Image 1 (cartoon, helix red, strand yellow):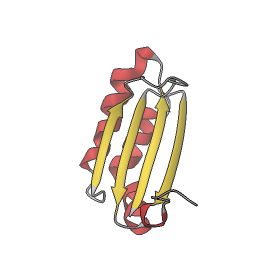
Image 2 (tube, one colour; image 1 turned 90 degrees about the vertical axis):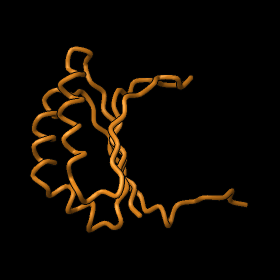
Image 3 (cartoon, helix red, strand yellow; image 1 turned 180 degrees about the horizontal axis):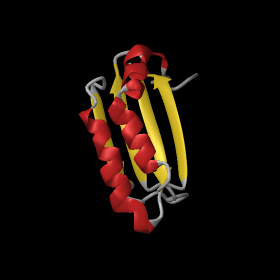
Image 4 (tube, one colour; image 1 turned 45 degrees about the vertical axis):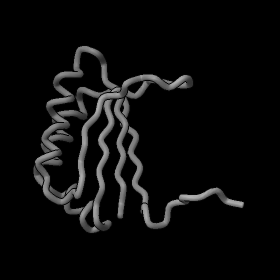
Length: 102
């Protein structure tokens, strides 16, 4: 399973528009799970992230199909000029470290 996580920083004035723009991603059927969340900002070392997109995909091909969907392009075109920073990461959950390394 591929996990796709994207962090955004967004000026206060643009948050409603970004939330709406990101919400269109939830209509894309290629994800097994897709959530758009707003950071609760409770971390003691950093709270600069405003929004998070979290997705779970069966395979890299499913993630690629998600990114090829017209709704993805619409969301990108809507959000990109409104956000400050975007940081994305994808990882294969089946290959992730899940126990302490000794």
